[in-house]
Length: 122
Figure 1 (tube, rainbow, N blue to C red):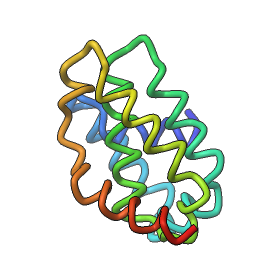
Figure 2: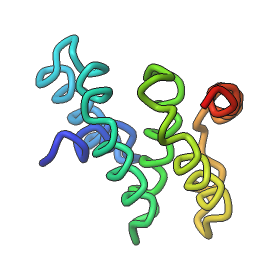
Figure 3: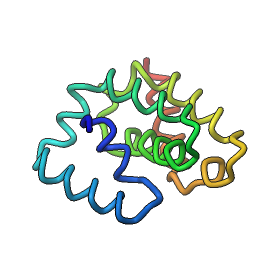
Figure 4: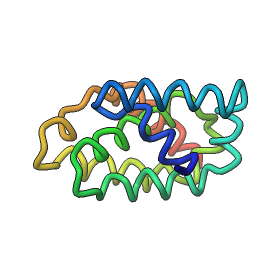
């Protein structure tokens, strides 16, 4: 399992998968999780966008939650080059046939405002 899929599984709908992934993420990264995401942000963004195209709605839902998490927790300097791609991806997800993907609780209001402000700065 790659670090990217492990991070995505932290939001997976199946509780066992989610809890296992969250605990494994903490064990593997310690306090460096945010730093690792920022260091490998290009790969992270590519993986999340790819995951939103999965045939499995639970994977798409988890990917959207991870994208929202990028906006909430990762530095603007790291996310700025990817904001447009990520926002466009979320806009597609908001039209998804699966209601859990479309209507997921992603804290998008905060993320959208955050990214809109930082997008203007670029």
